[in-house]
Image (cartoon, helix red, strand yellow):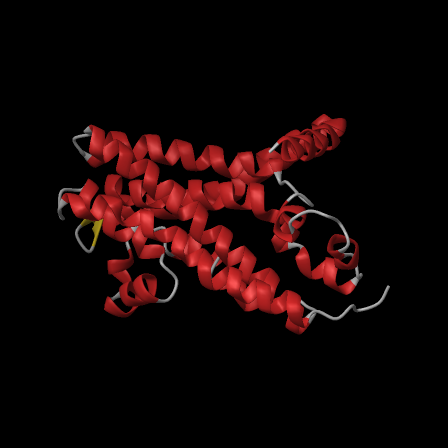
Length: 257
């Protein structure tokens, strides 16, 4: 952890060398997410509800995605830019260092500007809490925290899968953005509104539902307390992600310089 904090301080110092640039980048990130908020707001303001979910409930649902995703980007952004390391043979240097490969790639890039997106998510969460009518108990507060942590785990695992696939392709696969950036936007709504197929996909394939849809039912009083702990299963998604990463490392051949 001591080494990680050194990397953290180094990246922060580098970003703060150009404070105005950093500030405007943060504002830009905030505005980018704000457009998605406006879409949700005007849709619910016009129709009142979407398949029985009110504006406050949808804001609560969206805030989970809009907080967990930028947190995953903030700390796991190095995997999102990993294909460049493969193409330029920079991964060769990583292999000869006496540190964990995942740790080194994770520390390659820390995206501090994602604090803008995170701020938008926090604002949305505050609005959702105020408008949803949820009676907040200690268990519901715990569930909310677990939902955010579960989301960070799932998105971080997706970034790891994206990086692992580039061992075989040498280029980043753009379709993976459907499961990261795309999911942040479209799955901000409760999965139920898209149909049963999406709920099954988010349960058995990529576990968005484990940290968003099912725990949300508990928060809204539509399911039992057992649903509050389903986000604890989200870290299990790291198992196939790590297995694919290890396979990619074993198959790795340098692309040259």
